Image (cartoon, rainbow, N blue to C red; front, side, top):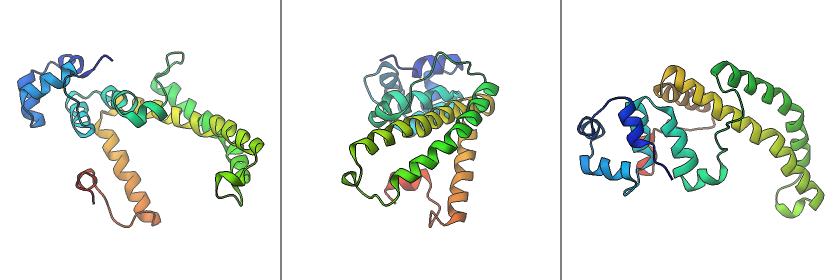
Length: 187
């Protein structure tokens, strides 16, 4: 697996000394991370992405380095036009196509709680509909997020995340504001 850290650092013309100091890590640790001899925690990758202003580091972390991400994150698509206008229109199209499919999904899960409540035919239909609805929207959202960070920088993702958390607080889905530092502490 080709690691993007050194390439990204060199693209923004930062020395290893400057990066190590900015990230509060030892220069030898940075070299080991860049060489793949030491893993980088997601928080460090996030800080690198901000420092290098490279949203591709975040995408790489989500889809390549994270064991769960390797299983569930969609791959980077090569066969689409991925300029920022195209990916936004693609999201709009996917959301429009998903509405009736989402209704069918809702009907399928009505009065069902566990796997045993579904017939084999319903399970097949559910996963087929899910693939047509949710998976396509997830892919479109990932592409829009990538475009957003390329346009506005990695810090834009933090602003979007804050707006999302504030909305969840307002709707009562969250009881308290939780920061990434709180999550690291296990709060």
